[in-house]
Length: 463
Image: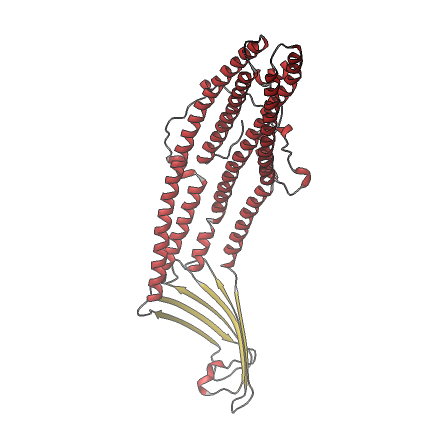
């Protein structure tokens, strides 16, 4: 009876062989795929923006001007060039410059005149209140100092989400592939068995109705296989699109032949996860860390806004010296110290900036608390789903063992003429459904285990 070995494919446990395992797929996915490349580029872009933002504060500012008064009673020419350099020392600014003014000047414009070789000058300005302890430029630098850590947290958060999505797609592909294999095995079993039934009908051992029932079963199983093939192709295309690589030669095959047969663990030996203290996971989770950094950056903006609410009080010191032919009306060297004060009444613009910054901080604090609550709930949900999947896998394994035993007994009855094809078909269908439920329970367990790691912020996929 050639169809008996086919029946044994359903009855005997599967033998493990090498295929596309989840850990291998994840290794290759994060090493070379469009999804992982986008994440890496995002991190590099943020790091580059940080370097540019940090350096822009110290960029010197060059100013130049030229005037030529060529008509009127006073004919003169004036040129001026200066270089302004910011420093990180209490907002101090340094100024060096050179100017030259030649020709005739009115008495009230005498300060524009220089000796024939011009005037060089040096100045320093120190803010005491506003822009002293902090200003918008140094605030941007302090925010930028968090940018690298923020980009790392963002990168890990994105990779965790990619790992979760990869798990969903891979285990759906695995389940649909196993469903297709079971449908093919059932179809092969029924087709091979029809030849033997026809012989028995011709001999008069069994009624012709059994042959017609067998033909109906074959058609039914052909339709089931076609539907399962459609479901598998859909899952296959979905997985292929997700793991595609920019290099065609690096693309991973996910055909039905690549579906591995895992060694299913004994559910009773798997550890159950009890309620755990999630405080460390909440604090160290990359998404929580990202929100915490965003809060720190908002607090920096808050400090800047509060500082801008203060009056402006600046100290300045300027030294200048004319060079060239002596001009009686000009001093050869000048030293000047001064204090300037500014306070807008009322300071509505500063109040608006301060209120806006306070609002952002309050919103970010709430967002951080919400993120930690969400992480706590995700961990608890994933823990519960993982424990239930282990329980379901144990139930599915026991059901499969009983279904195999029932098929053996029913097949023996059928061969002895004590049963009919309808009853045997029901037993075989129940066996197929039990095996599918075992596949599904194992997929659910592995997917839940992956989700549990992701919920805790663990970028880990090794088996």
